[in-house]
Length: 113
Image (cartoon, rainbow, N blue to C red):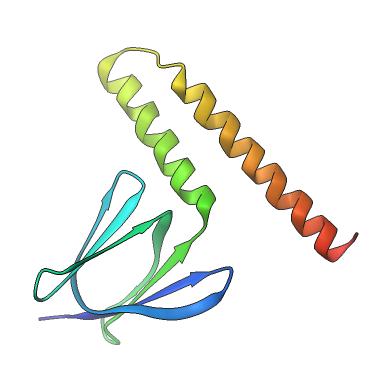
């Protein structure tokens, strides 16, 4: 059986967060990892960025914006599926734009300001 070592890349760099992982599932805005003895690790706002089977290595990328985008896409799909409009979709989109703008401002201040 192929069991993965899982590494997480975020603003703090790259670090190993789990090993012996045999199951990965996206559930809403959470990524659920399960090891060989069925213990779970749940990560918010993370996506799979690389799967390397020969090296049994799984790399994830995490940023708070990812969770918001996943939530937006899920709500959008729900609107399509149910043929209804949900104003919450607009609120989520505004949050995404606001956080993205703040990230850009912070980066600008750090590097140019």
